[in-house]
Length: 326
Image (spheres, rainbow, N blue to C red):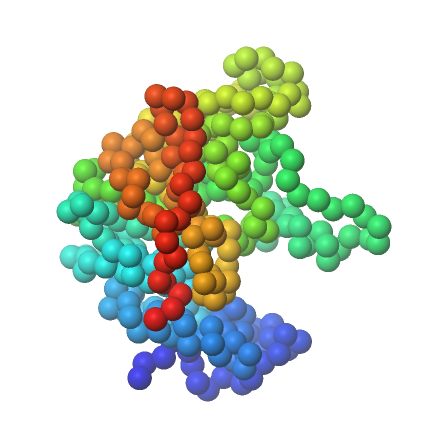
């Protein structure tokens, strides 16, 4: 029986994992899951996922996941999730199209998965777990609080990655059979640069420009610095005078993006969770040309902004998804 994991690998421990991974030129996440005896249950779950959807993955998928475990394991999870809840469809072309194709009410729906890594240079986002590892005794460390929507590195990185992938819709996908009348969804895993503190409040800011924000002078209302307020808006002006997209889904340029599936959980945790609904958010694009029906993604928490009432509502998952167990 085909296996996602090599059987010729040495048994590793957290102490020697990185050293062995570098020697074998493998991703340390892949090596840990392949060799740690205590992860055999999770390893079996990954194998079952792979065997179920391997015909919908790249032919070189096993080779790719050994080098890029975070991104490729998220792709695997998304494929399994979609196959369980919708049934994956075979694409006419593996080249130039998003990762997966499903049907929603007889309309093609394309899903592109992405799990960007944290930066390794001066732009690296300092996570709370990093701060705990380096802080002096007695140092107060906390998360939460108002988000500077124009400069917060996590918010900025999420927006920039969505924009990068959205550009592919025009530069690549439309040239290989995807149509503007199809549904287009981005599935984003942000675990590499978030500690799990992103929540509904911050999603409302990113996608609908709504929430408690810190506003700089020069904003359209000229509100003084550090003023908290609630407002819906598509753009704001930063200190350099540039117009920055704030509420992505209030911006008409994103009308071909039907929604975003997003989580800050790593796939290890998602694999063993009995209820993944509270860990996954589906953000509906209220201005999409092709809107996803509200009941379609009922297996995860859904956020939708109602233009008529100006309210943002969250629908909790109706039922437990079957993705993690056979």
